[in-house]
Each structure stands twice: as structure tokens, then as C-alpha cells.
Length: 396
Image (cartoon, rainbow, N blue to C red):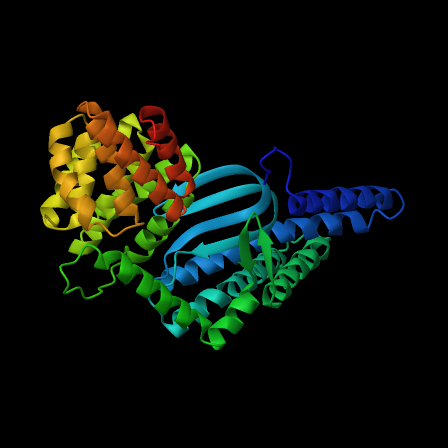
């Protein structure tokens, strides 16, 4: 993995340096002890096999326990390949000596499913040992086993044991601002009931998101897409590049195509797509803003947040009088220092400027800037603020 300046991160550079050092030592030793060099090579091959089987074991057990997986990483360092299978991203990286399997946020908790998922990696390594051993035994049974079978069988099995031991050791580390936790530590957290608490917290956070789209009688109902929607909505403020924004939109559109979404979830997803389009001003997204905002408002015609989104879309599309008519009543009723208040004031400012009232536009823009500072605007809103600064001068 590379840093912002293009250099390899310290952890990746260290792994790369170790590999170079080991290869150099092996080359020197091979000049005098040719017996050991094939064993070292087979150990490295066994490590690659072990990492793949370890993550495959996690994935298989997750599927058995209906645990949605967000990301599978094979290796570390700079990325070679990134491909999506269903809702799961697969990343292949340069140094295939480590890996990871990341589920979506825990929202549904069943102890035995999570226990199976956590030991799935070890089961994958056990399977790798069995496959290699059966392969050699089968070749021996037909008299085709090589005389040097032990030279690759023992190192490959030893590599599996090393991976199993490493995964059992409880530890965590920070990498690129993300904390990675070993399977052993996760299992301890499971025994301490930390995972159930996390699932309860995630459900509470999701219920809070959906409650904004209810009529006051909301009852949380989790669907198969709930954990994915929660993850994408929660991480939307941290999107920093166009590729990540595109992945975000495509993920929400796939969730919207699901047949089991509850009414509040549909409104949440549609409103998130509208907000993303208003912030990014992507021409490809702009073409759908009218459709998405109308669909959302049809589901909740009296909900202020959807009325505000519809008004902002009308202003964005140049229908200033219609947009102003929807946004003006919301300015007084929107909670102060909230995202809805910021959006209402920002787009009202743009509408008033387009309609020729520069003084009122400046007043609304000033309130929008102050609100953005109060709510600590995330990186994506900074771009929108910059656009507001160039369009409308603040009132002194």
C-alpha cells in the first residue's frame, strides 16, 4: 500500500525488506547447502496457499452463518487486482503473505455463527493440510509420488501451522488509520460479549437513521441489506475520491433493487443518493436527481428532510421558484446547527441569488457557512462550501 506521497507504507516496506533479506540469505546458503533452498521456497509457497485457504475458510463459514462479507484481501502492499463479486470486494496485493476478511457491521447476532466465522480461517488451513497430504498419498498409492515429496510436503504443512498459530494469538494493530484485529482477539471479544454489544449499538445507530423517515410509529425491522446500507451511509462522509463515490452510489442502487427493503430503508437510500448527487454535482448522477427525489417524496410526502431534498434538487435543476417554495418554510423549522439546516440555507441562498435578491442570498449563505462550521462539515461538504463561496459573497 502506498502513502499519499506514493511511497510504500512502513509496514509494507518492512515486509518487502524481509522478503529480500530472506531471498538473499537463501541464495548465499544455496551455494554451500543446496538441500535447504527448496524447503525455503516450498515454505513460501505454503504460506501463499495458507493465506488463500485461510480467507476462503472465513468466507465459507460466513456464508453458512449468513454473515455478509464486505472485503477479502489476499496479500499486502500495492494492489494488483480489485474485483467485486456480488457485494464482496476481492483485493489481490503484491506480497501474498497476509490477508483479511472484513464483514459488514454486525447488526444480527447469533453466537454460534460468529464463532464458526472466526474459526473458519483455521478450518481452511486444516483443509489445506489435508489436501496436500491426500495429494501426496494418492500419488504414492499409484507409485507416482516423487522421491523428494517430503521436501515440499513438510514445509507446506509447517507454513499452515505457522498461520494457525499467528491467527490464534490475540493482538491488534493500526494500518492506514484502520485497526486490524486477529481472529484470536476477536474470539476473546466474542466470549466477553463485546460482539453482541457492538451488534446492539449498530442496530441502535441504524434505528436512529431510519427514525428520521418515519411518522413516529417506527419499529425497527432488519433486512438482508440492512448491514450493507448502514455501512455505506455511515462511511459516506469519509469518501475522498471519485472511485469511492462511484462504489458508494452503485452499492446503494443495488440495495434499492432489493425486494425486501422496508419503506424507511427505501427513503433513506433514495435520500442518500440525492444528497450525494447534490454534493458531487456529477453529470451522470445529476440526470437521476429529479427521479430519485420524486420517488422519495412519494413515499414520505410530509417528511421535512425529503421535502428539503426535493427543494434542493429543484434549485439545482434551475427551477428556483419551485425550490424556494419548498425550502422557505423549512428554514424556521429545521433544527439549528444540523445538516438539514445547512442544506436548506445553502440552496435557498442559490435560489435567491438566481432570482436577483443578492442581499437575502448573502444572509442565507452566511447562516449556511456558520452552520457548516458548527456541525464540523465533513470533507465532501467542504467542496460544496467552496462552490458557495465563489457564487455568493458573505454579508459583513
